[in-house]
Length: 444
Ligand code: ADP
Image (tube, rainbow, N blue to C red; front, side, top):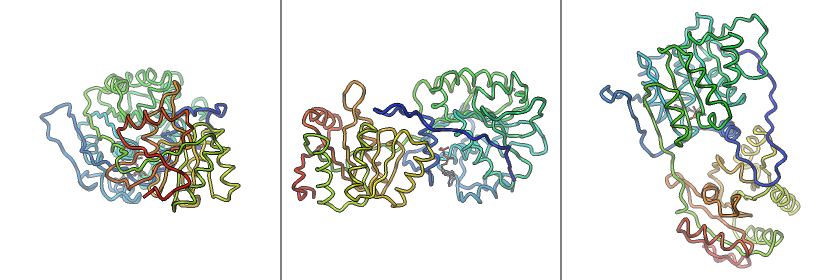
């Protein structure tokens, strides 16, 4: 099966100085998403396809057998527990595996099966008997490269003699080494170094080039240019694939610069809505008062699990200590933890080991805990200009119309923050009812 060379020990603890608003780190969020993922993410939308040649027939597959894969690869796919292609894989795989190879730009939210799709493409095009790099995958960070590598190793479990190597900083290759591994996964800077300075990789022999997480990539200084320099040295018959979870104009412009004559596949995200959420607010004097209101809510209704959001790490810590002292099982998720620590806290919460999760903004995205009955905004989300952060409010409280159950949301509001709450109410054109915390009968 697939083995890989040893991987350096990497410290991926995040920025710890910032005590106030946590900075959203795209790469860290993406890694967290991968670590806590359990299954495919669904979307009720249709896959949109734009072919470079609109006259050519459009194939889609409903089974992996239809793809005529090498037997050992099919075995690997089934060993991973995949029964049928995901929604985007149905359209993307026939294009990616076509002869002659076709280029592809694909956008769909994280968890929809993009990585599995391009790993499949790489493994199906690799020749195990040729001992030089044939597939090259660029990723934004060490950790994300390693995650992709693990998928290659799993899916390629039965592909004897196919090996992965990581072109990441810290992976020191002695002088004069000949790289015999067929699949290289790395960050743009190190890959560039390996190709041009150290001549470890001959780009003219690459058959499949993958640029993963393009949105995270262009967010990192220098990565776009480095990626383009690498791409320019590839042979024209090399298959080029680009993936992104989001598609702002900047990603699109980059994608068009780096992928010639692409097919384009998009799967829109399931939208969040506040329609099936009952929203309340409680007027409070101060932090202690907010905490009292929270306790009253706890005393008044039966709560399965709750997520409580604070604006600052300091507040989150304070609240955690208070609740623990009152005998609640609480865990604290905050930005100073490593991504692995965050993932394990989310996992414990999902398993029901803790009933309350207290967190700051940074961790809000991507947590999709279906069994949560209530969400509490201990502090309203506000942006740097002290205005309501509508998007974050929606992400904390909203659920998808199709898969979401009914939910309850409570906002703890100091009197001076009331105008902000009213703005939120107007913005979403939804009703946020005032609640007397002494009288929980109001919650129907
Ligand atoms: P993305 O790259 O879009 O974030 P992944 O390829 O990582 O998505 O897939 C998300 C999750 O779904 C992973 O746990 C992966 O193992 C799983 N998965 C991918 N494709 C399939 C499939 N066809 N059937 C079942 N599970 C799948």
